[in-house]
Amino acid sequence: MNPVGRLLQRNQEILARGARTLWINLPEGYSPGADLTSNSEYFFQDYSAFVNAGGASERRTFGDFPASAAFEYLVLNLPKSKARLAMMVECLASGMAQQGRLWLAGENRAGIRSAARVLESKFEQVEILDKARHCALFEARRAKVNGEFEPGDFLTRWSPDLGGFKLEVHSLPGVFAHGRLDEGTALLIESLETLPAPGRILDIACGCGILGAVLKVLNPDSELVLTDTDALALSSARETLVANQLRAVVVGSDGFSEVSGHFDLIVSNPPFHQGFATKHSHGINMLNPVRNFLRPGGQLLLVVNRHLPYQKWLDQAFGSHEILAENPRYQVLQACKPRTANRPAR
Ligand SMILES: C[S@@+](CC[C@H](N)C(=O)[O-])C[C@H]1O[C@@H](n2cnc3c(N)ncnc32)[C@H](O)[C@@H]1O
Image (cartoon, rainbow, N blue to C red):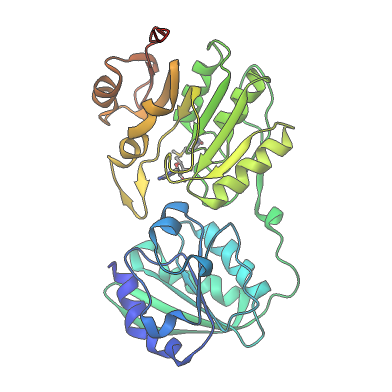
């Protein structure tokens, strides 16, 4: 269990008195004890955490913003991005019951100390309940915010310089490359313009949806599927599609877990992080089943940090690969699934 989970565990007896509690993004490895679960519900913004959490499925929800009015306690695990924290605190403060309390727990290195100021901007009363193992737990009461929370107030709308055409990209705080064009993404987009028109396309780990949107503009007749584990990335991708009048299927998925069918083209700028840790194997693990989702002749296009072992992995999975573009930090790699002759059955 991570240290934030341990801190919550040693304070959870306060909640065990029967308070209706909404746990938002449980810390990894932490599961509230049996005496808490009957009055608890669980809200996840991360699909992988949602499916791996276990427990009663009717009390678990995956989504972008929780409805908090019915709960006495809201327990929020500190998000990684400060801007996402501000948005979540406003969301919870504006929706919660008058007598409700918000608990916020996190590690010092993730910024829990300065998070107190964010709570103070939205609540009359903020106090520290506990601190240990380089973590702290705050309680906030008497929300100052009145009125509806409007996610659109937190959207950044921007137009990346894509040379050939215009695209409006929308992203919510904490989504990868929020409000800016990532250097790796930009390199991959340059390679997309020279591709033969694909029929069915998957943008896996889509973030704000920029790669999928570019592909759909370039190939209006294609069928596009976008997936990500982060509910706020999915909301951003949906906003990006709507802003550009593009149609696609957008799905919450842990890697390929919710993907079905086969594709002519799979593109990705794969993740580097898992939770707070940087895990070099995370993107490769996520992509491991990719070959099974390509049609014969289908291709995989990735932009990767050049020091990561993607070339070796592609050679193992596909037999070979090509480097389509590179700069000092990134490489665009392509691998194809061979066309196999379709022999009629005798
Ligand atoms: C480097 S970003 C790329 C985003 C977007 N394609 C772009 O280029 O701007 C990687 C994305 O992977 C997502 N991600 C991380 N782990 C995942 C998993 N297990 N399954 C699906 N998506 C995941 C993250 O939420 C993030 O949006």
